[in-house]
Image (cartoon, rainbow, N blue to C red; front, side, top):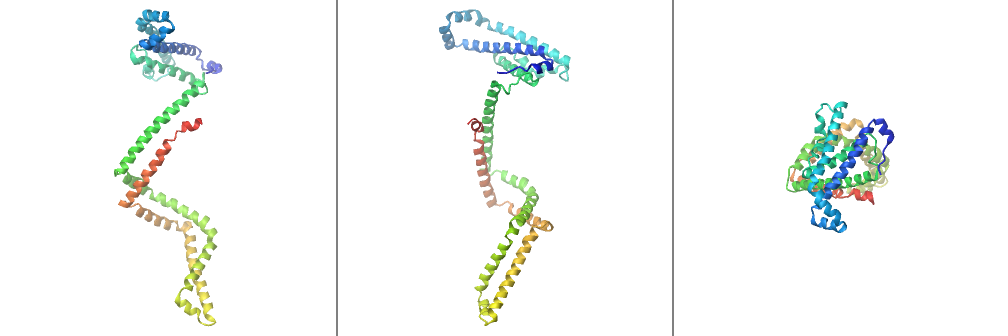
Length: 334
């Protein structure tokens, strides 16, 4: 149930207009209900049902009201036009719009809805929404927190989501079809999106390499040393020439041990220096240049790359479509 905020009504100085709005809401509601009733009365099925409930009323309405319904509707139209002209005068007096003749164009649905012919009459429904919006804007009523407002908002969101999801899915289906048929969309993505951003990608990769150096390599520095020492020891022990040196009495094993230690130290120092240098800002320009060339080479258009990109893009669109099909409104109500 919508409640009227009396304090806001007093502060808005719109009491007279509020009363007019209340009267108009009542008259429009009665008029639209009557239009629906008279439209149904034309149906033999509805008339027979009504006759079963009240033969007297059915006979009276068929002979006295229905033939002159347009005349009765014109009475409502006269009231609507009068109210429209009065509000136009108020808008001119209050200088609501930049020019005096703007009001009919802004509220065209009020004017067109006064035409007592066919579907034009249903535009009077917009007049109800216009009045409710005006009262909501002044804070006189709060539609959002009312049961009616929550009901409308809920199903409005459902309708909008369902329609938008179908539109998005149709668009994605069209993109997939174009990709599968060899559309230049892949080449455009490559040339207009990825390649122009290769410097940005290289910068991002450089930062990540620095982070890897600091967070991953440094804590595992000694583990890498141990791995290098074990690997070189195994390689050296299998070498025939080293085995010959090791067979020399007394000095052979010590020489081999010295060779293993020296080689492992040199290899570890080279690898360690390379990893630490890569993680320094002083060498970022070298890393960026190398990455820029690598990215450019990787993104060169080839048939194999195009096929791989096509498969990736089609699969990615399938995932997006699956997410679009998820009915969020249904999840929110469970």
